[in-house]
Length: 208
Image (cartoon, rainbow, N blue to C red; front, side, top):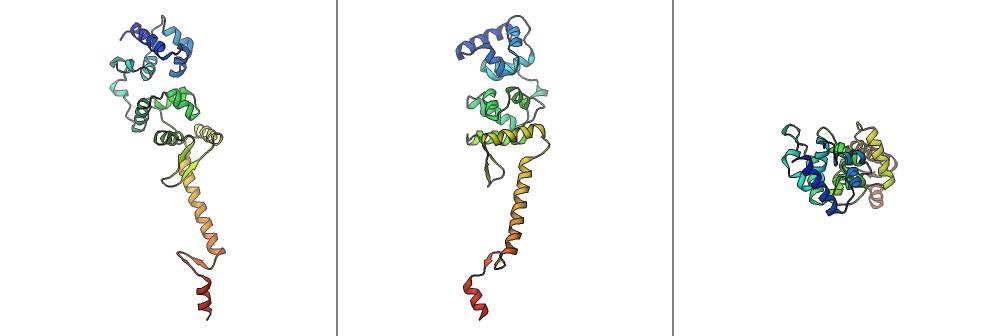
C-alpha cells in the first residue's frame, strides 16, 4: 500500500469517526506537526504506519504494515490485552486513561521489547475480567481496593522502581503480620490453643 493510499484511508477514517488529525496524532503517540507533515508531503514512517494499523482496521489488514516475522509479538499477556481491546472496541488512548499514564507509555509497553509493569498488569487484568477500576487482587482470595489517589501513588512508585515486586512484597508483609499477631494471641490468651478453646465449663471440671 502506497503512502497516498494510506493518506486517503486515514482521511476517510477521520471523517467517518468525526475525529480531528491532532486527536489521531495524540492517540498514536506522535506530535501533531509530525503527523501533519507525513499526511501531506513527507514520507510516512514505518512506526507511524504500524501505529495507524492498530487504530484503523483496514490498515491492520495490509500485510505491508505488519511486523516482520522476527518482530512478531509472542508475549501471551500482551497478545491477550491487544485482542481484548480490539474485541471491546477500546483504544490504547482509553487504556492509557484508565491506567493514568500517557498513550506513549502504553505504546512502549506494547513495543516488541517492551514490558508492562507488574501493578499495571494486575490492574489491566481486573479491567478485562470485571471492569472494576482501581481494584487489583494480590492473591486468589484477598481482594485489595485502592482509591484513585492511592493507585496513582503506586503507579508512580512502580514506574520509578520496577525492580520491586509489590504484590509479592505485600503478600510477605501480610503473612508476617498474621504470624506475629497469632504468636501474640498465644501469649495473651493462654486458655486458647491451636484448634481447641478451653471453655469455662472445662476449666471447672479440671479444677474438681
